[in-house]
Image (cartoon, rainbow, N blue to C red; front, side, top):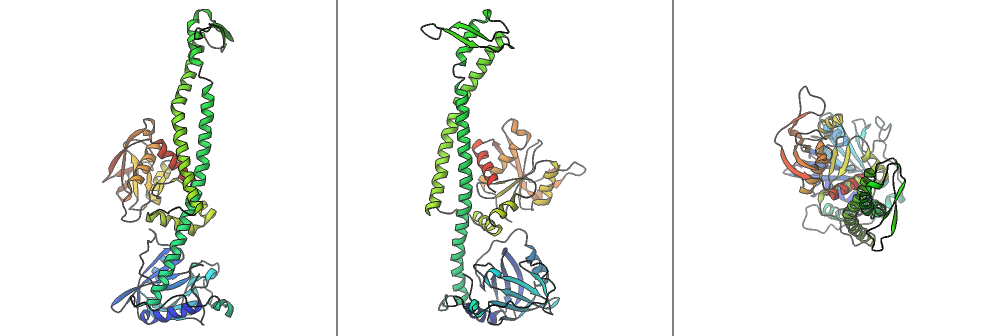
Length: 482
């Protein structure tokens, strides 16, 4: 639940004296509806959080560390361009409602930042000196240039659930109400993140289970088809023993089956268009298919059944509420991204654009170019300087990029996943193994005078990989799930 008007009045009263006269020295937008202002007041620095999320709309000082996106969102870029360095002249609540305005003096002159913390209609607006809207967080069409008028809410809306939920008795913080609000919403948002991770994982599991069941069923069908070739070695041997009596054009041949103790006559079908030797070779070849199926499909089916049981157990744990979320921070951040994008629409947005896209076992995005043009666009368009770049050594192949946060190291399993994809989409696929070079994107340069996709690489390392069918199957399943 968002802060009520009374709670906003109390926390504004706690913050305003400290903020007045401070300077906005940094601006962050860690999530699409959350803003953090780093404010320098005499002798100390404070971080003001403003959330316009419908369920958690609020403002308060925060001590939490947030992971920011590699590239600032457009609204954040606008604020940095126009409000960074501004002095805060006054902080006040408007008309006793869930609206707080920060009167500022920026390099371009007086302006106002308005936080409408009104639940589903929450918004953040920048006003010029005349009170006209320059930009808003929600990107409402035709709003820019309009004179700002505070929204009208009924007294019932303002008073709804308007009771004190937060204690101000803490002696551990100079801003006890902010500390209480932050602790409350930290728990609420952590629970929401867990639910998002859980729902995303359940969706992936259901798709993986469905696909794995289809695959196991197909393996059983292939095994059944190969089973009819079981006796074909016997047919080949009998034809081999009777080659002198068979002529091209025959549709069958009747021979004594010396593999049976009773030595019965056995009629073997023949392809009249083939020679006796050709018919014999066909029967031996099909029997080899039977042997190969027996050798390869039984272990696959057994392994697939084990994996299916594991996936089903995990899905059951989610459905029964006993599942534990991953502890890896980047998986949590990815779940927040999925939550912001929202369901089907979010998945469609992720699918847009070129490149093959995969998710590593650590939850990191892996991009693979499909051709020379895409390789060039991926490496020199999409990839950031700290992203990991991979390519098969000394052979044609796709560029592979792993999205990494600035300063982050690539997890070992993600490196193996990306290297396996670089091997798969290169000429090394024919041998099924080879060296893959990798480096940071910033050490990859375009080769002068060469075709698109041609590069020069420095500071590279290498890893030797072989095609791992289990790893590839998981990567392809994850590719379908995003």
